Length: 474
Image 1 (tube, rainbow, N blue to C red):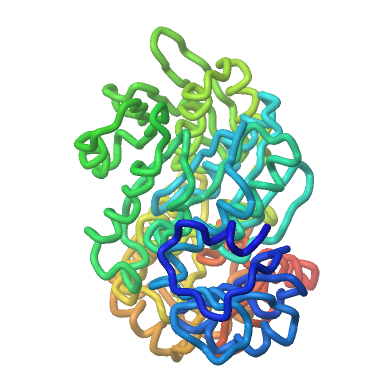
Image 2: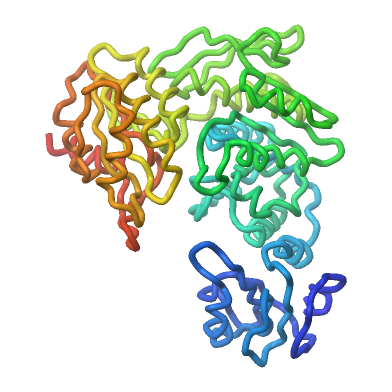
């Protein structure tokens, strides 16, 4: 595509213009190849403008920036490159056609809900794509995810690949950061799902009201005939009902829900739910563990209905999902790994596991550094009040002192049923050593993650792998 086509009609200043051919677009100077347009984004930690020289040396033929830089290359200056990135990507990769986009937002349950929906879509022969926290999936190909919702450039690139693979639908997690930072602004969703709202990411959004506002923006991006699906049992339902939305579907366990569920069996082997929709009752036997997964199943069920999938296929799609990596993942007998990293998620996790516990319920967890400090004592209180024994440890401390993070957590403890072991591997090893056959041990906070962030280092670390390592030594 010619540079003139790419920027036609956009509000920008142009220097050194030459109508070069653009073969690719990149934000990361390390990925630049000859024929590339390099877009300089200004982020919290890095500024793309500082990597112009590297982009030039790697073969960039044009630059998109927010300020004039010293370069002989054609330079397109925008007020905010992040604002126009989606427009540039959309123009370069072309309009999305023949694909229904399904976006899932909410504090907890996004990943599991997207996996449930993906399984339903697969059963319904949609050949679906998946974009989320664990990986991006195109047919059978899995691509490791760098973030929950990629930058708009990567999104359009992925969706273009899904289109080439004849996908009829793409289901994706849509984080509050992505909504706030306009990563999805140029996308039109056929279905938007809001799972629930509780405290998280206040280091970024500052207030719960701003956090909620960012999440609700997903519904502004619906197509004219699109569906808004939401959790009727969550307080945010009242906000959603007040929006000017055409097609609404809600789900929950209370009588007023349009798609209502009743949990019939709740076992360590999975949960069974009766789903009531209109005059029909469907029993779903899921391998997912924990009653809180009932909401994720109902969200998936509602999505199937909005898409016109028959009830039998919806049921079979849900039942064929074996589980989700790092989400109430059973690593060994009575030992689980879970991603719970908010007070609400930790509470749901421990209350669910309590039902299966004969002996003691032991939890190992920490809180991330450079993130919402206010939730640390709240998570301490939740752990202290819902587990029999708590091992407080580190969890991606980043630039903070792990001991100070642990001290913040301890402030919320209401019982003396805890110990502190800063080294996460040592904490897991200790948890395994004190666990008796009837006890349940859960390691929370990191789930599927395969790393620890320690100051400026990223080291390999996988909770499930560490559990297996110490079990082999017994």
